[in-house]
Image (cartoon, rainbow, N blue to C red; front, side, top):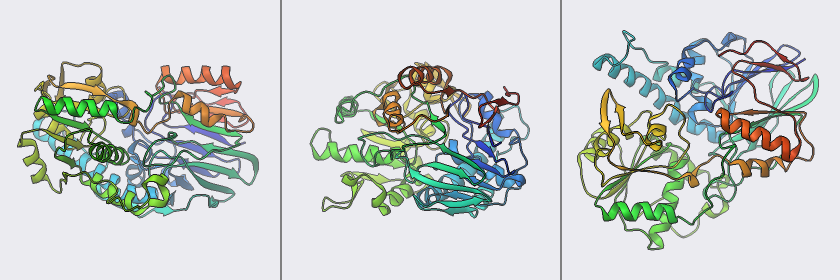
Length: 469
């Protein structure tokens, strides 16, 4: 009997890794993500996978966010040499995020050794840029809606998820079992700019679905009113607006809104800086794949897809340092989205103490991240070993979240013509996951399970193996 072992994103949001073992003995890993947030979770990145990497027949990727792909270089460094199947858009974005993650790992280790703010001596990177580039050589792009045999007797098909360029649900079928498994990855949203709505799916025997916002609904679309208010007020104070942003996905929607609000005359024309080489390259990938975007984004005579009047894309470290030293009203979009690393930390060190500035968070902030500390009201945060006072205004706006909320998850689930035999909730903190499980059971009557970390579940319904803390 086939089974799934939940090696990540179980009772937590990050670290997506789901191991499918077929009754014939094949092993397919769906996603290979990094754990992020709390130290106890980050430490899992240093643990072994749980099975020898060389025993895997294939790896499948739902999309290119680090919590879904960021452990792939580590897997390759540990000996995996098989194929990694993904959509062309995911391959494009992985070519940006994985080498960048390797560089950050190496730089963080150098900084820790230089300033001695770690107990490890010497501090070592989880993986290197070279490891990441070796991982890229294994990526095998597959188009949407094209069933492909990825291992003997195992067929996978990628279905548009609307969460990120190239993002997909993965429908897996097995020749020796009359069972369809739908690995949900992250579920996109309805009626948002840039990306299309998630594709409806009518049936699956086994379903994995995210629960990141399982106990919340996003604020209704206000046509950019909240963003307008933040920009105008910060400009009136003579301050700077810093937006920690995921380099892929979120930057595109931010620039869409800034362009729109400028054209409508609702915000002043301010210098807007994208201080992320990865984000700049990702913009080009989005622009080159208009057929995968929302119809309103497809080329029309209105000009470049993501430009604002005073857009500046920072190209190198020296320009970034000059931006940090400069003054005057401006909008700075820089990664990372949870303020866990990257160039945004230098801007936060400089701008957080001053009350005329604003820090705007536009995405999910996992427990244990600087972003979560700031939105929860921290008076100080530690950056590069220094304690930084928080005087700036901290604002959270979830309208631009790329994750479906509770109601959007239910809307997608109601598209099924029959209930899955088993539904597993992944990618959620305990309160969100438990609330969504209750809602699905009450409103849809489905059998819902919340797997523990490293729990193995037979697809006949019997739980096996001891969960690991």
